[in-house]
Length: 94
Image (cartoon, rainbow, N blue to C red; front, side, top):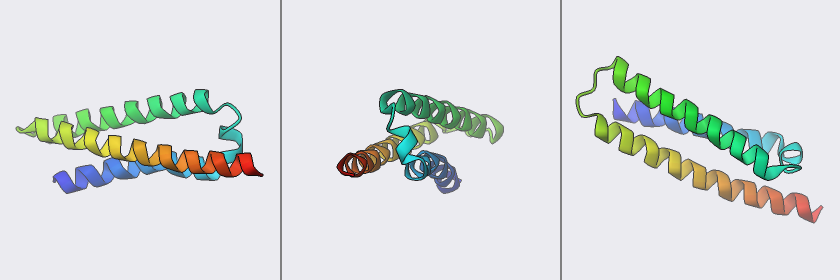
């Protein structure tokens, strides 16, 4: 059950990386504002997913789901930062 949970959170986190790859030129015009918006939306959706997952499946040991969910979120947020830095450097060089 926890593997499916973390796979779905990973998939939700990959959406922001795909957005950066697809719309790199328009996102970097106002990078800080766009990054904050994407971060808050991702945090909101993943937090709500964790809540609904724990609530609907009546999980007794909910702490492990919260901890692994946010570790997964943190990993993908760092990965998103690395990807966006590389894309920003590439667009500045052109």
